[in-house]
Image 1 (cartoon, rainbow, N blue to C red):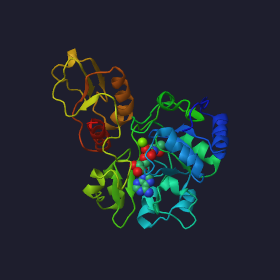
Image 2: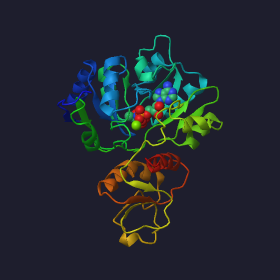
Image 3: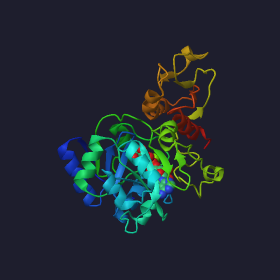
Image 4: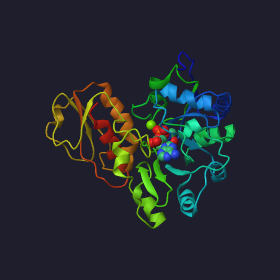
Length: 329
Ligand code: TXA
Ligand code: MG
Protein backbone atom coordinates (compact mmCIF):
# COMPACT_ATOMS: atom_id res chain seq x y z
CA UNK A 1 0.00 0.00 0.00
CA UNK A 2 1.13 3.56 -0.71
CA UNK A 3 1.10 4.99 2.80
CA UNK A 4 3.14 7.79 4.31
CA UNK A 5 2.60 9.93 1.22
CA UNK A 6 2.51 13.68 1.63
CA UNK A 7 -1.04 14.56 0.51
CA UNK A 8 -1.32 18.09 -0.94
CA UNK A 9 -4.66 19.88 -0.73
CA UNK A 10 -5.23 22.64 -3.31
CA UNK A 11 -8.24 24.91 -3.81
CA UNK A 12 -9.84 24.34 -7.23
CA UNK A 13 -8.53 26.59 -9.98
CA UNK A 14 -6.15 26.64 -12.87
CA UNK A 15 -3.05 25.82 -10.82
CA UNK A 16 -4.84 22.88 -9.19
CA UNK A 17 -6.01 21.50 -12.55
CA UNK A 18 -2.47 21.67 -13.88
CA UNK A 19 -1.03 20.04 -10.76
CA UNK A 20 -3.70 17.33 -11.02
CA UNK A 21 -2.85 16.66 -14.67
CA UNK A 22 0.88 16.42 -13.88
CA UNK A 23 0.21 14.09 -10.95
CA UNK A 24 -2.05 11.83 -13.04
CA UNK A 25 0.51 11.72 -15.88
CA UNK A 26 3.17 10.67 -13.35
CA UNK A 27 0.99 7.77 -12.18
CA UNK A 28 -0.23 9.49 -9.01
CA UNK A 29 -3.65 9.55 -7.32
CA UNK A 30 -5.78 12.70 -7.32
CA UNK A 31 -9.09 13.22 -5.51
CA UNK A 32 -11.38 15.71 -7.24
CA UNK A 33 -15.01 16.84 -7.03
CA UNK A 34 -17.69 15.68 -9.44
CA UNK A 35 -21.36 16.66 -9.24
CA UNK A 36 -22.19 13.34 -7.54
CA UNK A 37 -19.40 12.64 -5.00
CA UNK A 38 -15.63 13.18 -4.81
CA UNK A 39 -13.71 10.71 -6.99
CA UNK A 40 -10.24 9.24 -6.55
CA UNK A 41 -8.66 9.45 -9.99
CA UNK A 42 -5.80 7.69 -11.74
CA UNK A 43 -4.67 7.47 -15.37
CA UNK A 44 -6.99 4.79 -16.77
CA UNK A 45 -4.25 3.50 -19.07
CA UNK A 46 -1.68 3.04 -16.31
CA UNK A 47 -2.24 -0.34 -14.63
CA UNK A 48 0.16 0.44 -11.76
CA UNK A 49 -1.63 3.68 -10.97
CA UNK A 50 -4.95 1.80 -11.10
CA UNK A 51 -3.55 -0.79 -8.70
CA UNK A 52 -2.68 2.01 -6.29
CA UNK A 53 -6.35 3.08 -6.27
CA UNK A 54 -7.37 -0.38 -5.07
CA UNK A 55 -4.69 -0.46 -2.37
CA UNK A 56 -5.29 3.13 -1.20
CA UNK A 57 -9.02 2.37 -0.81
CA UNK A 58 -8.60 -1.19 0.43
CA UNK A 59 -10.97 -2.12 -2.41
CA UNK A 60 -11.66 -5.72 -3.51
CA UNK A 61 -9.72 -6.16 -6.74
CA UNK A 62 -12.67 -7.63 -8.68
CA UNK A 63 -14.62 -4.43 -8.49
CA UNK A 64 -14.27 -2.47 -11.76
CA UNK A 65 -14.00 1.32 -12.03
CA UNK A 66 -15.76 4.06 -14.02
CA UNK A 67 -13.72 5.81 -16.73
CA UNK A 68 -14.30 9.58 -16.68
CA UNK A 69 -13.88 11.57 -19.89
CA UNK A 70 -14.56 15.19 -20.86
CA UNK A 71 -16.72 14.62 -23.95
CA UNK A 72 -18.52 12.12 -26.15
CA UNK A 73 -15.67 11.88 -28.67
CA UNK A 74 -13.37 10.70 -25.89
CA UNK A 75 -16.06 8.28 -24.64
CA UNK A 76 -16.37 6.72 -28.11
CA UNK A 77 -12.64 6.04 -28.20
CA UNK A 78 -13.03 3.65 -25.26
CA UNK A 79 -16.55 2.23 -25.65
CA UNK A 80 -18.92 1.19 -28.44
CA UNK A 81 -22.23 3.03 -28.36
CA UNK A 82 -25.31 1.56 -30.00
CA UNK A 83 -28.29 3.77 -30.87
CA UNK A 84 -29.82 3.52 -27.39
CA UNK A 85 -26.55 4.22 -25.58
CA UNK A 86 -26.01 7.23 -27.82
CA UNK A 87 -29.50 8.50 -27.09
CA UNK A 88 -28.87 8.32 -23.34
CA UNK A 89 -25.43 9.93 -23.68
CA UNK A 90 -26.86 12.79 -25.70
CA UNK A 91 -29.76 13.31 -23.32
CA UNK A 92 -27.88 13.17 -20.02
CA UNK A 93 -24.16 13.86 -20.49
CA UNK A 94 -22.50 15.65 -18.88
CA UNK A 95 -24.39 14.39 -15.84
CA UNK A 96 -24.86 11.77 -13.12
CA UNK A 97 -25.27 8.81 -15.49
CA UNK A 98 -22.74 6.02 -16.11
CA UNK A 99 -23.15 3.84 -19.19
CA UNK A 100 -21.72 0.31 -19.34
CA UNK A 101 -20.91 -0.49 -22.98
CA UNK A 102 -18.66 -2.93 -24.87
CA UNK A 103 -15.00 -1.87 -25.03
CA UNK A 104 -13.56 -0.69 -28.34
CA UNK A 105 -10.94 -2.95 -29.95
CA UNK A 106 -8.14 -0.58 -28.89
CA UNK A 107 -9.69 0.53 -25.60
CA UNK A 108 -6.84 2.15 -23.62
CA UNK A 109 -8.39 1.43 -20.20
CA UNK A 110 -6.22 -1.02 -18.24
CA UNK A 111 -7.73 -4.50 -17.78
CA UNK A 112 -7.30 -4.13 -14.04
CA UNK A 113 -9.67 -1.15 -14.10
CA UNK A 114 -12.40 -3.16 -15.84
CA UNK A 115 -11.67 -6.25 -13.75
CA UNK A 116 -11.10 -8.21 -16.94
CA UNK A 117 -14.64 -7.60 -18.27
CA UNK A 118 -15.17 -6.91 -21.97
CA UNK A 119 -17.38 -3.97 -21.05
CA UNK A 120 -16.38 -0.58 -19.68
CA UNK A 121 -18.29 1.89 -17.49
CA UNK A 122 -18.02 5.47 -18.76
CA UNK A 123 -19.28 8.85 -17.69
CA UNK A 124 -18.85 12.56 -18.38
CA UNK A 125 -19.15 14.38 -15.07
CA UNK A 126 -21.04 17.70 -14.96
CA UNK A 127 -18.58 19.62 -12.81
CA UNK A 128 -16.30 22.44 -13.98
CA UNK A 129 -13.40 21.27 -11.78
CA UNK A 130 -13.62 17.67 -13.01
CA UNK A 131 -13.87 18.89 -16.58
CA UNK A 132 -10.83 21.17 -16.22
CA UNK A 133 -8.77 18.30 -14.81
CA UNK A 134 -9.90 15.86 -17.52
CA UNK A 135 -9.11 18.37 -20.28
CA UNK A 136 -5.73 19.30 -18.79
CA UNK A 137 -4.80 15.62 -18.46
CA UNK A 138 -6.09 14.60 -21.89
CA UNK A 139 -6.76 10.90 -21.23
CA UNK A 140 -9.47 8.89 -19.47
CA UNK A 141 -9.38 8.95 -15.67
CA UNK A 142 -10.76 6.02 -13.70
CA UNK A 143 -12.23 7.14 -10.42
CA UNK A 144 -14.16 5.32 -7.73
CA UNK A 145 -15.58 7.37 -4.88
CA UNK A 146 -12.69 8.81 -2.83
CA UNK A 147 -13.31 6.92 0.41
CA UNK A 148 -11.92 3.87 2.15
CA UNK A 149 -13.77 0.87 0.70
CA UNK A 150 -16.99 0.31 2.66
CA UNK A 151 -17.14 3.83 4.09
CA UNK A 152 -19.74 6.39 3.11
CA UNK A 153 -18.89 8.28 -0.13
CA UNK A 154 -17.31 11.75 0.33
CA UNK A 155 -19.32 14.86 -0.48
CA UNK A 156 -16.69 17.30 0.87
CA UNK A 157 -12.92 17.49 0.46
CA UNK A 158 -12.67 17.13 4.26
CA UNK A 159 -14.29 13.67 4.01
CA UNK A 160 -11.61 12.64 1.52
CA UNK A 161 -8.90 13.96 3.81
CA UNK A 162 -10.28 11.99 6.78
CA UNK A 163 -10.21 8.74 4.83
CA UNK A 164 -7.24 9.05 2.50
CA UNK A 165 -4.68 11.59 3.79
CA UNK A 166 -1.24 9.97 3.62
CA UNK A 167 -2.42 7.47 0.98
CA UNK A 168 -2.91 9.71 -2.07
CA UNK A 169 -0.95 12.51 -3.73
CA UNK A 170 -3.43 15.36 -4.13
CA UNK A 171 -6.90 16.49 -3.10
CA UNK A 172 -8.49 19.26 -5.19
CA UNK A 173 -11.03 21.06 -3.00
CA UNK A 174 -14.01 22.28 -5.03
CA UNK A 175 -16.41 22.69 -2.09
CA UNK A 176 -19.52 20.59 -1.44
CA UNK A 177 -20.93 18.49 -4.28
CA UNK A 178 -24.40 19.18 -5.70
CA UNK A 179 -26.01 15.74 -6.16
CA UNK A 180 -24.62 13.79 -3.19
CA UNK A 181 -25.24 10.22 -4.35
CA UNK A 182 -23.23 8.38 -7.00
CA UNK A 183 -24.20 8.24 -10.65
CA UNK A 184 -26.97 5.99 -11.91
CA UNK A 185 -25.44 3.05 -13.80
CA UNK A 186 -27.21 1.69 -16.87
CA UNK A 187 -25.92 -1.41 -18.65
CA UNK A 188 -26.46 -0.94 -22.38
CA UNK A 189 -27.18 -4.60 -23.05
CA UNK A 190 -29.90 -6.07 -25.29
CA UNK A 191 -32.38 -4.75 -22.79
CA UNK A 192 -31.01 -1.60 -21.07
CA UNK A 193 -30.63 -2.48 -17.40
CA UNK A 194 -30.55 -0.39 -14.24
CA UNK A 195 -27.38 -1.69 -12.55
CA UNK A 196 -27.32 0.93 -9.79
CA UNK A 197 -29.89 3.58 -8.94
CA UNK A 198 -28.20 6.95 -8.46
CA UNK A 199 -28.24 10.67 -9.09
CA UNK A 200 -30.38 10.47 -12.23
CA UNK A 201 -33.84 9.03 -11.62
CA UNK A 202 -35.13 5.90 -13.35
CA UNK A 203 -38.16 7.86 -14.50
CA UNK A 204 -36.09 10.36 -16.50
CA UNK A 205 -34.08 7.60 -18.18
CA UNK A 206 -37.17 5.58 -19.06
CA UNK A 207 -38.82 8.68 -20.53
CA UNK A 208 -35.93 9.11 -22.97
CA UNK A 209 -35.71 5.40 -23.80
CA UNK A 210 -39.48 5.07 -24.21
CA UNK A 211 -39.29 1.76 -22.35
CA UNK A 212 -38.82 0.47 -18.81
CA UNK A 213 -35.31 -0.34 -17.60
CA UNK A 214 -34.72 -4.03 -16.93
CA UNK A 215 -33.76 -5.07 -13.41
CA UNK A 216 -30.60 -7.11 -12.81
CA UNK A 217 -31.26 -10.80 -12.10
CA UNK A 218 -31.81 -11.34 -8.38
CA UNK A 219 -28.67 -13.46 -8.00
CA UNK A 220 -26.58 -10.48 -9.10
CA UNK A 221 -27.62 -8.69 -5.92
CA UNK A 222 -27.26 -11.59 -3.55
CA UNK A 223 -24.01 -13.11 -4.86
CA UNK A 224 -21.16 -10.81 -3.89
CA UNK A 225 -18.59 -12.87 -5.79
CA UNK A 226 -20.22 -12.48 -9.23
CA UNK A 227 -22.06 -9.18 -9.18
CA UNK A 228 -23.22 -7.47 -12.38
CA UNK A 229 -22.33 -4.06 -10.99
CA UNK A 230 -19.90 -5.57 -8.55
CA UNK A 231 -19.80 -2.46 -6.37
CA UNK A 232 -23.32 -3.35 -5.29
CA UNK A 233 -22.00 -5.43 -2.39
CA UNK A 234 -24.69 -5.98 0.18
CA UNK A 235 -22.86 -4.11 2.95
CA UNK A 236 -21.17 -1.18 1.27
CA UNK A 237 -22.19 2.16 2.71
CA UNK A 238 -21.23 1.41 6.24
CA UNK A 239 -21.43 3.75 9.21
CA UNK A 240 -20.15 2.23 12.48
CA UNK A 241 -23.54 2.58 14.13
CA UNK A 242 -26.40 0.17 13.46
CA UNK A 243 -28.88 1.68 11.02
CA UNK A 244 -32.60 1.13 11.69
CA UNK A 245 -34.84 1.82 8.69
CA UNK A 246 -38.50 2.90 8.51
CA UNK A 247 -38.38 4.05 12.12
CA UNK A 248 -41.78 4.88 13.64
CA UNK A 249 -40.26 6.21 16.88
CA UNK A 250 -36.87 7.11 18.38
CA UNK A 251 -35.12 5.99 21.56
CA UNK A 252 -33.11 8.47 23.68
CA UNK A 253 -29.76 6.82 22.88
CA UNK A 254 -30.46 6.84 19.14
CA UNK A 255 -29.68 9.40 16.47
CA UNK A 256 -32.51 10.28 14.08
CA UNK A 257 -32.09 10.84 10.38
CA UNK A 258 -35.35 12.61 9.62
CA UNK A 259 -37.08 13.45 6.35
CA UNK A 260 -39.93 15.85 5.77
CA UNK A 261 -41.98 17.98 8.15
CA UNK A 262 -43.36 15.19 10.38
CA UNK A 263 -42.04 14.42 13.86
CA UNK A 264 -41.68 10.96 15.40
CA UNK A 265 -42.60 9.97 18.98
CA UNK A 266 -39.45 10.33 21.12
CA UNK A 267 -37.82 12.84 18.79
CA UNK A 268 -37.32 15.54 21.48
CA UNK A 269 -35.28 13.10 23.58
CA UNK A 270 -33.19 11.63 20.73
CA UNK A 271 -29.41 11.93 21.08
CA UNK A 272 -29.17 13.98 17.89
CA UNK A 273 -31.50 14.75 14.99
CA UNK A 274 -30.62 15.77 11.44
CA UNK A 275 -33.26 16.32 8.76
CA UNK A 276 -32.31 15.38 5.19
CA UNK A 277 -34.94 17.77 3.88
CA UNK A 278 -37.55 19.40 6.12
CA UNK A 279 -39.44 20.30 2.92
CA UNK A 280 -39.41 16.62 1.79
CA UNK A 281 -37.39 17.44 -1.34
CA UNK A 282 -35.70 14.21 -2.47
CA UNK A 283 -32.95 16.00 -4.43
CA UNK A 284 -32.00 18.00 -1.34
CA UNK A 285 -32.10 14.80 0.73
CA UNK A 286 -29.72 13.04 -1.67
CA UNK A 287 -27.26 15.92 -1.47
CA UNK A 288 -27.29 15.74 2.35
CA UNK A 289 -27.36 11.95 2.78
CA UNK A 290 -23.70 10.93 3.07
CA UNK A 291 -22.56 14.01 5.00
CA UNK A 292 -25.38 13.58 7.54
CA UNK A 293 -24.66 9.86 7.96
CA UNK A 294 -21.03 10.74 8.72
CA UNK A 295 -22.03 13.48 11.19
CA UNK A 296 -24.53 11.27 13.03
CA UNK A 297 -22.09 8.37 13.13
CA UNK A 298 -19.41 10.64 14.63
CA UNK A 299 -21.66 11.10 17.70
CA UNK A 300 -21.41 7.33 18.29
CA UNK A 301 -25.14 6.74 18.89
CA UNK A 302 -26.46 3.28 19.78
CA UNK A 303 -28.21 3.29 16.42
CA UNK A 304 -29.22 5.65 13.65
CA UNK A 305 -33.00 5.54 13.20
CA UNK A 306 -34.09 6.60 9.71
CA UNK A 307 -37.54 7.86 8.81
CA UNK A 308 -39.34 6.37 5.80
CA UNK A 309 -38.30 7.92 2.49
CA UNK A 310 -40.53 7.62 -0.58
CA UNK A 311 -39.30 5.23 -3.30
CA UNK A 312 -39.64 7.69 -6.18
CA UNK A 313 -37.24 9.99 -8.04
CA UNK A 314 -33.91 10.08 -6.20
CA UNK A 315 -35.62 8.28 -3.31
CA UNK A 316 -34.79 5.00 -5.07
CA UNK A 317 -31.04 5.74 -4.82
CA UNK A 318 -31.33 7.09 -1.25
CA UNK A 319 -33.18 3.96 -0.09
CA UNK A 320 -30.68 1.72 -1.89
CA UNK A 321 -27.76 3.34 -0.03
CA UNK A 322 -29.64 3.24 3.28
CA UNK A 323 -30.47 -0.47 2.89
CA UNK A 324 -26.77 -1.17 2.32
CA UNK A 325 -25.87 0.91 5.36
CA UNK A 326 -28.36 -1.13 7.40
CA UNK A 327 -27.00 -4.58 6.50
CA UNK A 328 -25.72 -6.25 9.68
CA UNK A 329 -21.94 -6.67 9.75
O1 TXA B 1 -20.86 9.10 -9.23
C1 TXA B 1 -20.08 8.19 -9.43
O2 TXA B 1 -20.33 7.25 -10.19
C2 TXA B 1 -18.72 8.24 -8.69
C3 TXA B 1 -17.97 9.45 -9.20
C4 TXA B 1 -16.59 9.56 -8.61
O3 TXA B 1 -17.93 9.43 -10.60
N1 TXA B 1 -18.00 7.05 -8.87
C5 TXA B 1 -18.38 5.88 -8.29
O4 TXA B 1 -17.50 4.84 -8.54
O5 TXA B 1 -19.36 5.75 -7.63
P1 TXA B 1 -17.52 3.48 -7.72
O6 TXA B 1 -16.23 2.84 -8.09
O7 TXA B 1 -17.76 3.72 -6.27
O8 TXA B 1 -18.66 2.66 -8.36
C6 TXA B 1 -18.52 2.14 -9.67
C7 TXA B 1 -19.58 1.12 -9.95
C8 TXA B 1 -19.36 -0.14 -9.18
O9 TXA B 1 -20.62 -0.60 -8.71
C9 TXA B 1 -18.80 -1.08 -10.24
O10 TXA B 1 -19.01 -2.41 -9.94
C10 TXA B 1 -19.57 -0.62 -11.45
O11 TXA B 1 -19.54 0.77 -11.32
N2 TXA B 1 -18.94 -0.97 -12.71
C11 TXA B 1 -17.79 -0.49 -13.22
N3 TXA B 1 -17.49 -1.08 -14.39
C12 TXA B 1 -18.49 -1.94 -14.66
C13 TXA B 1 -18.77 -2.85 -15.73
N4 TXA B 1 -17.96 -2.98 -16.78
N5 TXA B 1 -19.90 -3.58 -15.66
C14 TXA B 1 -20.75 -3.44 -14.59
N6 TXA B 1 -20.53 -2.60 -13.56
C15 TXA B 1 -19.42 -1.87 -13.58
MG1 MG C 1 -17.94 3.83 -3.93
